[in-house]
Structure formats: structure tokens, C-alpha cells
Length: 413
Ligand code: GCU
Image 1 (cartoon, rainbow, N blue to C red):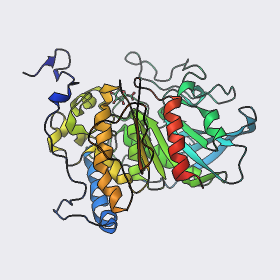
Image 2 (cartoon, rainbow, N blue to C red; image 1 turned 180 degrees about the vertical axis):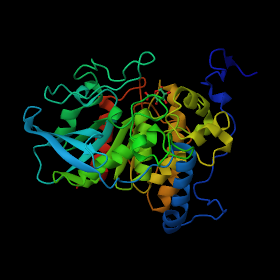
Image 3 (cartoon, rainbow, N blue to C red; image 1 turned 180 degrees about the horizontal axis):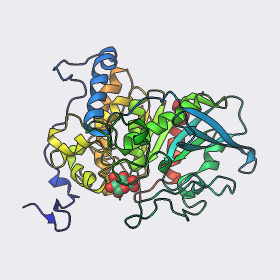
Image 4 (cartoon, rainbow, N blue to C red; image 1 turned 30 degrees about the horizontal axis):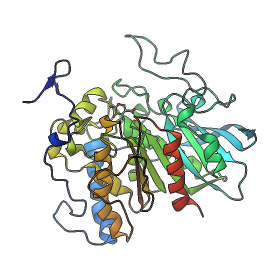
């Protein structure tokens, strides 16, 4: 008997391992035509492109490339910030020739450096000024869902300064020799369903187009596109080593970080923290959040075609282990939290396990096992790092410390 939630007409959320349906994952190493992939060359030239294109057309949607008119402007610079430990820069990334549409990158660079530094790059939820208590960071214009019909999406009073500081250990990163670059995701596309009118999408509509086609970008793909545009800037900043940028994100931004790294090989490493459904978690396990649930709660995140798989995961031509595989041979870290059952910690772990054969094609170690490893016992040895932290859905100093250790192995000279 299937239980239905009265309100959403949706099967009840499954948190019972014995109720996980039997499933067969698509094989990352078999092409659509049925050919076995046995070497890295065939993976890179044949299988990877076809998988990437399936994820584009069926899951996240196709995004435009770098716009011709893209340009940058350093809006502010302060060489003595965070107790003189870091230089802060704020950079406008204008999406087109005009200066009307832009996002602002907040960048911290360690002052103690002999060379260009590796950088963690990630989106923030509430505004650049919320990530630490640096009083001179420009307040992001808070863009949220209008409270009522006709209300303004721009909140006169946004989030307080340092409201998200527990999630961004800026000083720890600086002390370890890393830069940090972050962007308020609302600058790229505000996080609510408005038929794709207020973010970057309309800048790229063809004549007469009013919304993305079913295989074109949703909001996650737009955010990932924004991260690539940030990379376009980072490539021009001489204090940044653009060949050592780790793209990172928590939760919906973890989904975004994985997709950004899959699409854009310039990212040297990816970190997914509690990314769950549509991120690292296998869709076919239907444990915690499901495709049906995410498409109904967040109809703007994925492309229109992804709706075909609501309650129909077996029909997906891909699963999320193949998203991890698209990042190979670059290092990827999958972090979970044991109480965050909505994100399916075991499903996130298994995606790493099932991406491993692709890493092995490159002669690299991925992740192994069939059961979720012990809590608070990070696995940092292979090219797929992993931990399950005790506690709930969040990104904490503990999580970041593991990411830094992993990055030290892969990005430090
Ligand atoms: C919701 C959503 C998740 C998402 C999370 C977050 O819980 O269902 O898919 O990861 O929000 O972004 O915090």
C-alpha cells in the first residue's frame, strides 16, 4: 500500500532502507550504442560527451556559453582586511555589453603568498555581506520571492551582516593559503519560480522566446553558468591561480557545484556538501527527497524535460553517479551528514562508489564500499573524497577542514 500525503498527492517520503526499490543503474562505461568503454581516450572523446549531453537535455538544461559582451570591473579593493591577513576585492561581472545586468564577486586573497593562490569558489544564499563580519563588504541586494501578488522581490531589509558566517570560515581558508570567491546566487537568478523572467535567462532568449525550451537551462544550470563566468574573471586576476580553483556548494549549491564542474573542465576540483537529490544522491534509490518531490517543490531548478522522470526514475537515461563521473579525472569530494536523511547520505556515498570505474580508467583510486562508512571518519585517500559528519543539514567548520585537507593533497604545490 502506498501512503499518500493528503496535501501534495505525493507518496510519503521513504526513510526505510528496506523500502528502497530494486534498481539497475545505467553503466557509465557502456555507450548508448552499447559499446564498452575500456580506456580513458574513448571515455573522453565518446562516452563523456554523450553523457554530458543527456544531463543537459534531460536534467539541468543547456546553457549558453560565454557571452561576447562579458566584461569585468573591479569595484573596490582593500589590501588590509581580516586583521591585515587578506586582500578583499569586489568585482562586477557584467553579463552583456551593457552595465545593466551583473553579479558581484567577493574575493579574499591571502596577503601571505609567494605566488598566485588556489581558490575555493561558491555561491552564497543570503548575500555577500552575510558570509563574514567584514564591515566593508557591499551589501547584496536581497532578491526573494514577493510575499504577495505584486509585491517587490527586492527586500528593503535583507539579511544581517555575518548572518551566514558559521558557513564560511574565511580566516581558516586564508590561514591555509587559500583564496575565497563567493557570489550571491540572487545576482544570477533569484531562487523562486517566476517563469524565468527576472534572472539571466531573458538576456539570452531568441527573438519571440519567453521562457526556456524543455531542454534549456533551469535555475541550477543558470547558477552553474554564473560560476563559469566567475571563472572567466578569475582567469584574469593575477593573484589567482585559475588552474587551481575548487568549486564548492552546500545543498542546492552543492548540486550546482557538481554541475558546474561537469560542464566546465576549468574547475580543478569540486566539493558537494549535502547536495542530495539532483546532486550527489542516486535518484533511483527514491530515499528521502525524490525527483517528483523536487520538481514540485522547486519547479524552476531543473529543465522542463526532467519532469518526465517524476515518479519514473527507472526511465532516467542517467543517474547521479554519472554526474560525478563527468568530473573525472579531477578530484571530487562528497560530504554528507548522518541526520540529513532528506539528502540520502547513503545514496550520495554510492554515487561516488559507482563513479569509481571511470576514475579507474585514468589509473586513479575513487571510492569503494557498499555500506555507508562510519560517521566522522573521512576518506581522503582517493580522487573521490568522502565523509559523513554527525549532525544535520548544514556546512560546518568540520566539513571545511576536510575539504582543505583534500585540497592540500590535490591543489597544493
Ligand atoms: C530543500 C530541497 C533540497 C535542497 C535544500 C537546500 O531541502 O528539498 O533539495 O538541497 O533545500 O538547498 O538547503
